[in-house]
Length: 338
Image 1: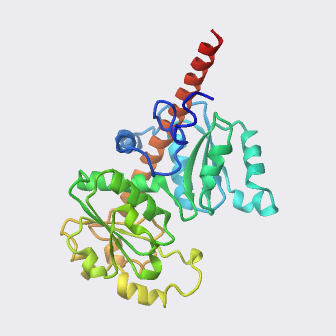
Image 2: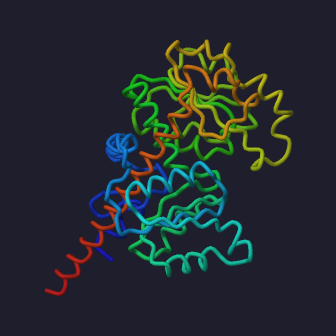
Image 3: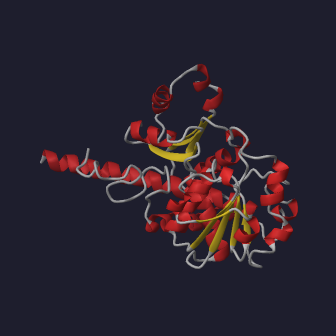
């Protein structure tokens, strides 16, 4: 243990470099900007005939998905392979944990595979933090989404999408619409937007789908869709997460669409050059009209492309931060012995 271990945030090494990527909460603006800039540099890799760079050659990335997700899993796999890493993907939800194995036992078995990085997706909030706290020191942990808590790479790919289409954040109005209560994406987006200097963050939804304490994120809350969308630059629609809902939070999907669905008419209330985003998968006719999802203002497919670049950036930066931390600790030990 180095002298600064007690004070250093779990996600950062002693030099303030990324070591794990668990949440956007508490990360400095400079680091978020570095992630965006690094991702920008990786975008051109996807346009090459040979879509590979050697940054993680010889490293093993283990995708550990306790919860299903085709889009997130696939883009993490692509990102790791484009960095020349060896990739193992385990759908743990259908194997060990379903047979009664604890999270700690699963972790120890994964460590025995000598992986250098775990990408973890879990239905329980805090699972990625738990793993990062208990994993052996040489392994980096990336949160691929945990419960209602955080989805930091989705948050950052959304920020990259906004920056590439709208420029700087300091003059933007951004509306986040729908099921805020169950959305880890919404939390990550609110944190990122606030950190990056967005002055007008609007949250729109029915009272039953808005959590208590939203004010701490520095957002304005709207229950009227038309009022909330007026003159915004960016509209981020969220999926209704029926699988996480308990009780009668909504009268019906049809009623939700009537009040909060993004239609062509409602989109006209935003600025003429406003963009439309959605983390996917889209429920057409529930959250968004097909004409909007497929229209000229939609950047939903761009988000997928940018997601690969963001995940390449996070994987490479976390691995670099882990390597730097090991060197720092070796130097510290050497000094102690002299």
